[in-house]
Length: 567
Ligand SMILES: Cc1cc2nc3c(=O)[nH]c(=O)nc-3n(C[C@H](O)[C@H](O)[C@H](O)COP(=O)(O)OP(=O)(O)OC[C@H]3O[C@@H](n4cnc5c(N)ncnc54)[C@H](O)[C@@H]3O)c2cc1C
Image (cartoon, rainbow, N blue to C red; front, top):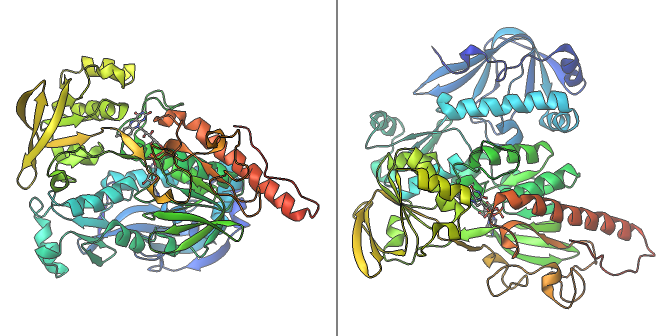
């Protein structure tokens, strides 16, 4: 048995001790029970677990790695167990074993959620500890989930991307670089052709897609008993998560369905500096994790990967059909499916996607480039942020734009920084014409004013603009010529939600309107800092609509028309 170095220091932020008044609150919600040495309160691989507070005795938190258990931390009286997965509903990846006999308080998950939502002091202590524990695990304290796959494999990158975006602690092992892989493959009887694999709680998933992995981890809709909600939110970018926070905090039973992984474009950003309230900037991952915890704290359910395929109206509800054919109903739907980045129109692009061509610039992609020359295509803020981040990570960066002025489409603060960064070179009036490489990208071909050149590079980061991700709504909602969803006044004839022109005319007026949020809406800014507006608008109107709906349903004298909301 090894003692793990991470939590051994018992940092009070990570492992706080509850005071007597806090214990008294929890006492009213849980049941006491005696525990004996060697008993496991929960084990890695369990579907879920309760919230435990230690009243007497001691419990160790363990991770199984390389065939043996490592102790992450030992908790004594006044300490509580658990981690963020208690709220997110993910499968358990650590075990808790009693090492000194005593008594614990067992609080069911639903009661814990109630405490977190209603008791700010105690709730904050628990949430802060859960977040701190997740950060510790992400910093490498737990190898409970292992991905074994080549750095050249797009399949393996997709799985790692899914885990990283969802901030699920994991370790990546490359068969070409990590000596331990050979032993692992023997131990689990895996042949090289079966890679990539994911090893979690002693199970092996061969060639897992993010969907299969999510199902194993308990992140898909299958883990939810319900199929009918007050509020459905499609898309878990900043706009969708903001809508979920506001909807759930108003008591709406809220479900967010997300096609790829929580965070949307913002989750792919290394550093966002123009978001209100973060003067020194915040990484997209941190921002999104906070938003997810905030939404879950109020009881919102978030499921991914889970893609909406269509939207229809049925029996007074709006029904979203998912790609697997599952129908989920909502009394209101907020569409926050955002935008999808455009793909470069060059030959062999698909050969290099995930293998030299990337649409995100996070720690993971920076590590893949390892200080080598990289090219960033695009002149927007996302390209600017990516270039600065990659340069700071040690890569010489060339930014390529077709226009003649970087300032035409990028915020001034980013242009100034780029100009001051010696490791970044900006090439204007230039277009990428081809990609070269065998197993992975090795160079790009470009043309500048009719002059062709070949630039060796390890990666191309593509941020060349985005189109609204509204394909799933075609035939269901009114789209404009650029595929933005029309709502409100843009429907014309001075109408808002009302009458024949409502894109999804509700069967019971005012009962189940659709609302829009974020970048799928035509006038929306492409910046997360503009999310104050979408976060308030749909939730306020949706809430008013739902409450009006409830009132009108309860009022037999109601004969009015659809309420008109002011935007
Ligand atoms: C690398 C990068 C860096 C950036 N840096 C900055 C910055 O520093 N400052 C700034 O202001 N802006 C920045 N941006 C832009 C910013 O992230 C976006 O403006 C913001 O994320 C838009 O939020 P959204 O929720 O409307 O849409 P999105 O972020 O696009 O989220 C939409 C979500 O909906 C999901 N979805 C789509 N279709 C479906 C479907 N059918 N079913 C279910 N889910 C679906 C998508 O998978 C996605 O997760 C950056 C973007 C990138 C890519």
